[in-house]
Image (tube, rainbow, N blue to C red):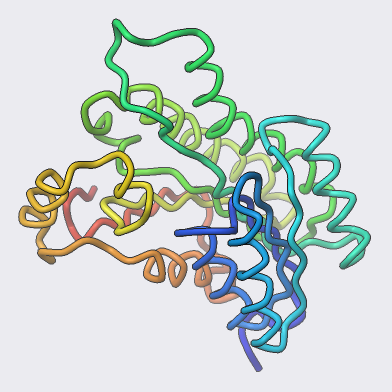
Length: 251
């Protein structure tokens, strides 16, 4: 028996990079998966096809999870496909969008970063929590940036992920009596399009060189951790923000 057999998972931002790896890993463990996307439809459909090839059910749902009406649409599509029970929620949608120092920040950019990274986590959790019961697991994607302030020009990204970190702890207290566990995963340097777009090669090489394991992480390694937190094997783990950064920083 696979450890997530017969469970239903919703993964926001599930069409590429870490989100895609998570969606596929959950399916490998036996879950049926709702793959949320916004811009990358082709990637979402490829992810769904790969999940179905594993023998699991999956749907792709376009929704801007920073907007409440789109979150309601995502919830409705989930219920239509899998019924009124969700076992696993992974709040993965997010982005850096651009590197801007303090003097370059604009209100519209602030709203974009905070809404996509933090508002989405709050209101997707609010929407799906009523569908969850004892044994349910919410996993939020935070970041090493929440601990150290991030690299140059990422103050809003780091701050939004810091908010995710704190919200995860608060929700662990609030939802624990219902039997729902809430944890956050805090990746360091993971080799994805995120860093292809926003981190210079020489900076990536420098960070990898000073990481104790001397390498970047892989999206699949983050997915392995998420799958563990989603499973009954982690039944007494809640309220944690778990680092996955090769030893670059730790408590």
